[in-house]
Image (cartoon, rainbow, N blue to C red):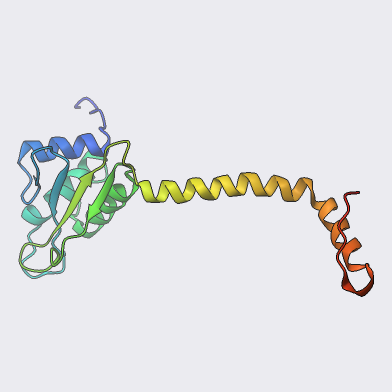
Length: 167
């Protein structure tokens, strides 16, 4: 029986796979080794070959112990699991390339993000929402009875005149 392998995080595992140059269609697109492309052929295509077009997905399934030699090949499931793992990565984003999924060799392009760039837009909006929620919610709940009393008092004034007094 072989010794159990250490399971690498997806980023390190991907970097190793790209650097090994053993996976068809997987390669770096820049000198900084931040942008890479992945062969992304649909398993339903007539020219789909598991041993050529699904190598990366199969290797990820092996690495995560979801596939063993001798198991029934299931490239669609491998690809789905790989895509889900990519989507969970906080330091990776897909780079949209026009017509990249068309043609005989469809591919997707991804870029590793530096820690200071991580999904900045989402973080900014999320931060603002948290700030508003944390500052407004306590005000509403701590001043709930004061607000109700002010509203009731102002509604009871003659001729609809609004008079606010702190009670």
